[in-house]
Image 1 (tube, rainbow over the protein chains, first blue to last red):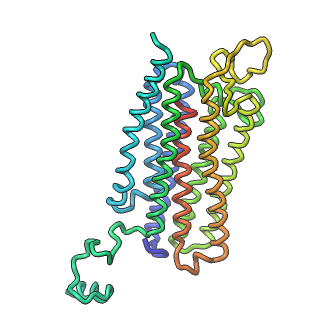
Image 2 (spheres, helix red, strand yellow):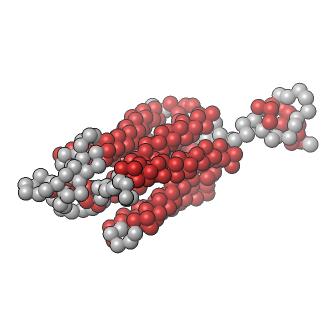
Image 3 (cartoon, rainbow over the protein chains, first blue to last red):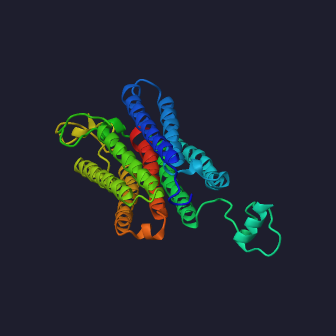
Length: 109
Length: 247
């Protein structure tokens, strides 16, 4: 994006997009905390944790897409950043199952 | 035909111009500057560092039969004494960081319009938000240390009745999982260190803007790069919040 060439309409719509993303981030955070306090003690932990994880990922997408402007970059650039993160899926599964295995070793039935 | 001639002139190519598909090094295929690209890849590497911390936290936590309930550990609010406000203060911290991030987005947008005063105005709010977040974190750390949490000692055990009032006598309690303190101080501390360096960089960005450095340069790309780093700090907080306060 060349500097100083942002048209008035682009500027206004960019501003609106940012405030919208802010509102969404705020609302999602309030919903997460409210769920933790109201539903947390009642519902199964696995269900609550899945909800928190999905809500946090949604927040992450808004921050990266809108605030960090990645949504407006070239697709090839997005892929170059996104593909390495695929390794984290492996890491999460591997270390979670390792942790569970430590638990079983320390607390045999 | 006229377009072809134009391209030839612009790039000073002797041979016939090839279609502009980003090959040959004359053009940047990703249409993003070197500086911003490198900031993104640095942040990618930093994302792996934080992921490694948070995933180790998950592995250690899963290996424990019991873990302190965040609603009980993080339930204090400054100036409210022993009032039970679960997750209240940390929610405020989250909003402070989001709003600080928004301020820097606005600064970047004003930079695109070469509006020096606008960039300075929003950078001030970005910096103040960062300082406010660090102050909140200092209070929270101080409070937890006061309650007895140490990197190698965790007072929040399963028997600690209403676990914030562990100092009361005749209450039987045993220490909680020992890694809790090290993980909490280590990970929130590493994030706080990022916030701290971000604030310093933003102060430098504000100063350079006020001296007209970027205006003379003709673009405010430096503010964009500072912005990328600052939003990343906000992004990491989303996952720290998830791991320590929600789950």
